[in-house]
Amino acid sequence: MHILITTDTVGGVWNYTRELVTGLVRRGVRVTLVSFGGMPTAAQSAWLAEVDGVRYLPTNFGLEWMQEAQGDLRKSARFLRNVIRDSKPDLMHLSQFYYGAMNVTVPKIVVAHSDVMSWHREVRGAQPKDRWAKWYRGVVERGLAGASLVIAPSKWMLRSIEDGFDTREPGGHKPGGKQKSRVIYNGRTPGWFDPMAGKENYAASAGRLWDEGKQSRLLMELERPALPIVVAGATEAAGVSAHGGSSGAPGAGVRLVGELSEGAMRKLLSRASIYIATSKYEPFGLAPLEAALSRCALVANDIPSLREVWGDAALYFRKDDARSLGEALALLHGDDELRLDYANRAYQRALRHYAAERMVDEYLAAYGALMDRRVKAA
Image (cartoon, rainbow, N blue to C red; front, side, top):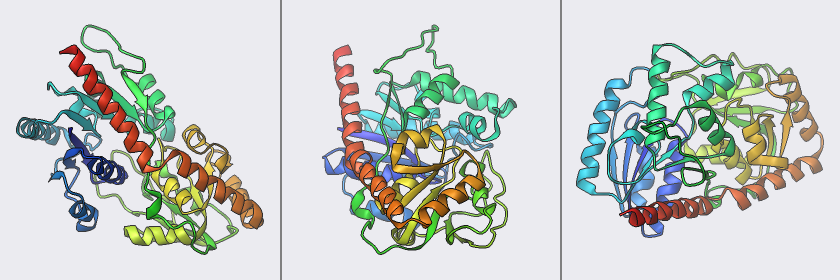
């Protein structure tokens, strides 16, 4: 089987892609990988040197959620069409909505990692209605309608897409049911993380500080947190975001360490006793998963997607409430037995439900079903 996969180098989709591609190649799948959003750093692309069976084509083309990307998208679609013509994949696995509308003969999976409209709804309480937003909505709807299968990383995200966009195909038919959409939860490789390291007296958190959806400002609003807090992540946008904000200045007990290398981030999580998930918009959340695989106790904002993913394996604070967050941190910090219980709950849930092997298995099953359907229709 030969799969053409598109990805981007800007956010967590890159780590998702690494897990997926590595797992597929180990199972004998040939992969053509095309990335958008900017050229990867040497550190980002280093893993590709260790994976045989991947043809990698990095590009600088912009992404659909970038405000000035319309021209780039048309060019990137032409580029992708040439790749399809030359490489002749059996199936396309797309991490962008835009290419789902391409008129090609191979089946197309569109993965709805996130979208701007649901971000605005959850973060700002209303969706934008300007000219760009109208264009973006059309891009998403055409991509979803053109997909052979739509996959989301959580039930919450799939409902958000299905409720928020019109995905009717030409002629007014709106397909539904399991053949058109399904959930495949993200996964990470447990062996990459260290759940046995000695824990230290600090909590960790991660996320782009300029992204209102990550809501790192809650950490800045804490008055005398019960334990030191270390926050990793970019502090400024690179001028490409369709949505952003200010995280404010850190108070006493909160330390910003900026973007960390992969190794440094793993070390930070391995030593942290608690991980804080502050996001008010999180379709799945790879950072909390990495923390869980590092055996951190999870303290999470009480939003439906995090409830879905973590169930009773996290301690939740009242939605978007800094005081409640402080109380949850104090509770875990003051009770070693309770903190260890939550750490073990998160670790065990991550192993059972969110390992990369399971994710790859489910994608292979989805690929196989699409290929079988194509053969039967021929």
